[in-house]
Amino acid sequence: MLIRFTIENFLSFREKQVFSMIPGKGSLKSHHKSTSAKGVSALKAGVIFGANASGKSNLIKAIDFGRKTVLNGTKPEQLISTNFYKLDKKFFNEPTYVEYEIQHKGKNYAYGFILNSKEIIDEWLFEIIKSGETKIFERKNTTEYDLGFLFKKNKTSEEKQFLEFTAKGTPRNQLLITQIRNTNVIDNVSDIQDILNVIDWFQNALTVIYSGTKNISKKFELHKDTNLQQVFKDMLEYFDTGIDGIEFKEVDFEKMDILTEVKEDIKSDLLSEKSEKTSAFLSNPQDDKYYVISKIDNLTVQAKLLKTKHKIVGGGYELFDLKDESDGTRRIMDLIPLIIDFFRGGNVFVVDEIERSLHPNLVRDFFEFILDKCENINSQLIVSSHEATLLTQKLLRKDEIWFAVKNKEGATKLHSLEDYNVRFDKEIMKDYLLGRFKGVPKLGNRNQLSILPINE
Image (cartoon, rainbow, N blue to C red; front, side, top):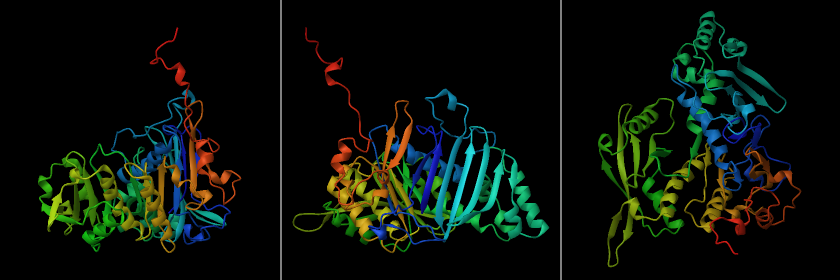
């Protein structure tokens, strides 16, 4: 679970902004809160509203930036791929600040880093409880490390030397936990479980889903024991798509018309010993085809092409490619694996523009469905949206509703509905559209548009 995320000097975020999933004082919809771990709970849903270009998607990109920095790292001598705030010269030479407070494996952690395009300046990991915190490790001034806690867990001189050697051998442009993930540290020490828990959260719990379909992308990873055909049939019928099921056609993975680096990335992910999942759902927008890629053994993956089934008048079925289905149906196909993994628990989904190509009633029902059945599930769904019908306290708690607003200088500010004095029975959609909570577009004077004819 994501407890809190903090970002500074990245894309449209100039000053430090905090997106919090910590429950407020309200007692309504208590099943929207996760099971307490060490006295800390997190909300299971978060919806960020705002005008176009307000920074909603930039928040999601910021969350994903940290994930990619941890999992992918940076090659030696390569610049770190960051994106500073560009509308204020004072921030051109300032570093980016990123921090995640997370709940995973029964513990709460604060993990973060400060970086510029050349090096990691600071990095830290703390375990947090309601009454305080314990430092797991801290990195200062790029090369200075405090490993005292890890030395207490790994007491032999050989273990301490190996940990110190690993830290000192970490490149200036690389995170320490990335270095640990990419080397055999675990085979040479007794206990670095807290670091492994954080790595596992980024690799196996956090999934970021963008709205665009211009790039080939792995959408979700699925467990091998899932009966995909039955699940898809049930969900497609539930969402009234007119589809009567799916079938799979086995194809040669190596001959798939997909970029080699994409195929290698999928194989690397699925065959990794650190991955908990065994299958991936892949969309190829170049030909509008969907595939399920499954791990067969430690060296091999199998690809199957997904086709939809439609009843023929007079009996029988016709098989369709996904390109023959509507944009809305394809978007539903994207979300079905999310639903599967959400109810398995332990997953955090961050989705950009959840409403893309979907009817407002379907978006509302999707959230009702997730939140109505989440009482004993510790998963999270965080989305950006323009869909104002979600703005109701019958569906969401006040602390689950957020707004992104850009000021006159183009910097994004975040605030929650919890900041406003709003009764629990107050319908808030109208007030939002009227601008009470900000986050709506400020339109200009149409009579001053240059395209209009000039009246003499």
